[in-house]
Image (cartoon, one colour):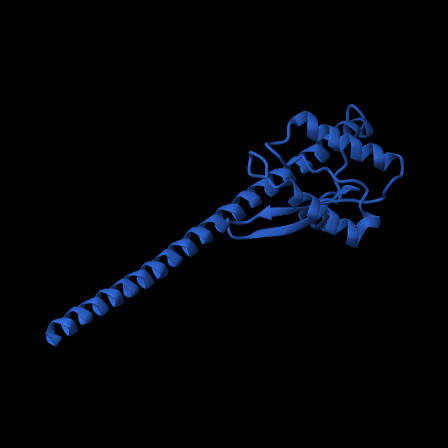
Length: 185
């Protein structure tokens, strides 16, 4: 256990379990990116690394799996496709309805704009997933600590009740012995 309360074996166990079941699908794992925030440079490095692997043909689809925060008690496991870019369902519905059929002229060219925006979009999606995952982890920790506190309180109440009953039984036994001894005289 480290100073910050993090168990390094916990992450290794999860990674090893996933590698055992899905080893052929996993290219690499990064374990320290969620600790104490993720700096802008670090997430851009990750997105650049993913794009370089995609451009070199190492993989066809990149999916990030994370816990989406819904409430302190509920986290939703989410798999989000990063590459190739999958538009949100609302945009796909609008395109199907013919609402996205307008023609625009771009300056600089569309390719130059996309070359600049897509790496930034990838970095933002990674950062969003990291934040959602961190919020989910804190919510789960808060819920676990609340349950542990409640269970400890219940245990203290039961033990106090047991202690008081035992103490009362001992006092009653001593009183019976004293009264029996007084009657015998």
